[in-house]
Amino acid sequence: MNSHDLINMLATGLQPVPRHAVAKRNTLVLLTGVLVSLILLCLIYGLRPDLPQASQQLAFWIKLGVPLSNALLGLSIVLALAYPGQRPRVAYWLLSVPILCLWGWALWVWTGTAPSLRMGLLWGSTWKVCVMNITLLAVPVAIASLVVLRHLAPTRPVLTGALAGWFAGGVGAGVYALHCPEMAAPFLAIWYVLGMLLPTVIMAYLGHRWLRW
Amino acid sequence: MMEIELHHLMLESLDGNAASYQLFLRQVSGLLRAYLRRRLSTTPDEVEDLLQETLLAIHAQRHTYRRDALLSPWLYAIARYKLIDYLRRRARHEALHDPLDEEAEYLRVMDDDAHASNKDLTRMLAELPEHQRLPIVHTKLEADR
Image 1 (cartoon, rainbow over the protein chains, first blue to last red):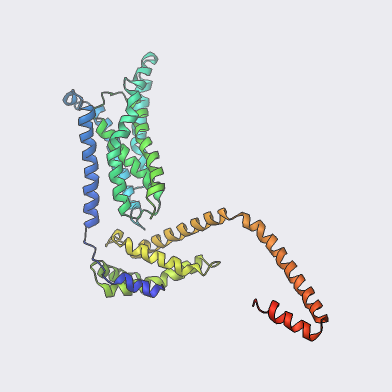
Image 2 (image 1 turned 30 degrees about the horizontal axis):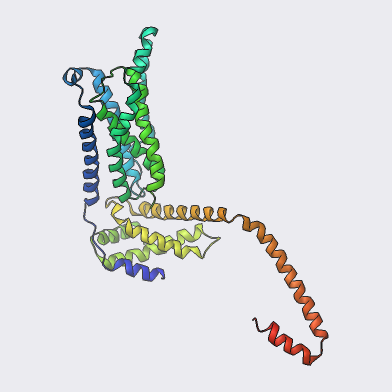
């Protein structure tokens, strides 16, 4: 077939593209992912029983805010990368700001604690399950992201996958914070960050496999 | 054709105007053909194939165009993606067939040999009398051509 015939073929029976249809679909699918993650939290782990008291503390809000701001930054870059020719509105280095704040806080707590007590702050009592729990809660959001991205056209599939994983990991960690009893900054600085990195690595690979078009 | 005009045609196409879309794709293929030709100067035969692949991608992904965004970055991002995809496929394909490069040398030597034996044959045939030479030439040598 020559290109002229191809063009005629593509133009016949052209379907209009409804305005905002894609944006609505993205929002719906991603919100479903977040909702499923919250439902999983309630079904598997349950909310922490002292949630009202905990929410009086600044540490709780940092623990919630760092992953969620990561998620929002990741999402805003992913949604730019998914459309050909769009540049992300935020610079990539901004992704490190919430993490650096968390690490700064952790370092401050670490140096201000007697050496004999430091290990307790680092390992907490749930370090073994933390990374896997965050990853599990990230799964619904990761699936939702893949559904959204496969319908779009990311020109850098691996990077897009990785940032979608960062977004999913951020949501997973934020949701898990509603259950997790740990409040020590060093714990969060290590295990929460690893919990967000694992979905990032997995999703970079899945981006390589599934986000080509 | 400039950005503003193409952008206008694209918006009409997104609203389902087939005539605008046809014109749009024709203008775009002119631009993209030039773009691909510059980058595939060693394999000009592939330009048209890749152009069609890119047009299909533009068609399939037209919902990813944001109406308020600039059009050319979108177009060229798709073309670039398809070009890189093609170059990667070709590199992989060539890597699979790497041993052929060594054989190509060997094949060329064979060609030289064939050429030499052809010369010998012509010389020996010339020594034969007419009534023996012509039947051989017509039935054995030219029959293959």
